Structures are given as C-alpha cells and as structure tokens.
Image (cartoon, rainbow, N blue to C red; front, side, top):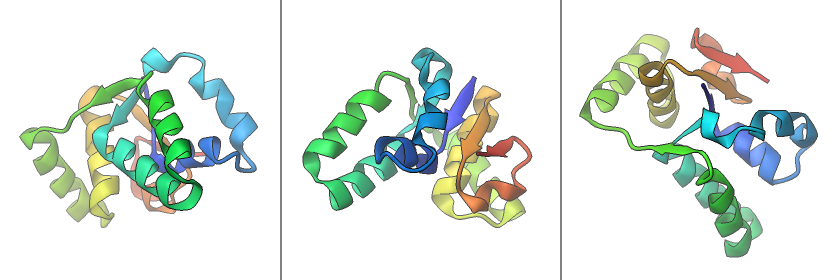
Length: 121
C-alpha cells in the first residue's frame, strides 16, 4: 500500500518533468491511499493555477484511489508527528494516515525527509 503525497499528484497531473516516471505508481489505483487533505491540496492548487476543469479532472483521477477520512485518532497522531518531526500540519496529517494504514508515503516534498516511512521520488 502506498500513499502519494500532494506533491506527487500535482507533478503528475500538471505534466511536470517527472510525470512519465510517476505513471508506474498509478497502475493499481486500489492500492493507493488518498487522505482527504491531499484531495483538498491538489484540487486547490490545480484550480488556482490551471482552472476548474483541470481541478475537477484531477479529482476524478484521485477518487479512483482509496479515499480516506482522518478521524480523531489520526488528528492526535498527526499532532504528535508534527511535534516530533517538526513538519507542517498537512504533511503531518498525510504522515499519520500512512502510519495508520501501514503505507509508505511517496513524495517530492522535502518536509518528508525526516519521516522514516516516506520515500523521496
């Protein structure tokens, strides 16, 4: 099970330099976790930079994965992760979701460098 951070989705959906390399991770969307905070971040960034149509198209692709909501346990876990690794709230929420589900985070965000269950792409 993997969790693609917002940075990975945005790189892929915006056709960034590493987009072709990222396609291999999308072969099995049922094995990809997407926390609602990632859905939020991707939609917001793409809507602001590419327009509503691109943002809605992105949401359609993300919803092929396993969307997970964060509960009170995840919120407290995220707070602990944020304090322990000194990372921002959204990144801590992503890290907490991955920890809860035993997934590894694939990311292009330097904030995850301190997280043992995260892998930079």
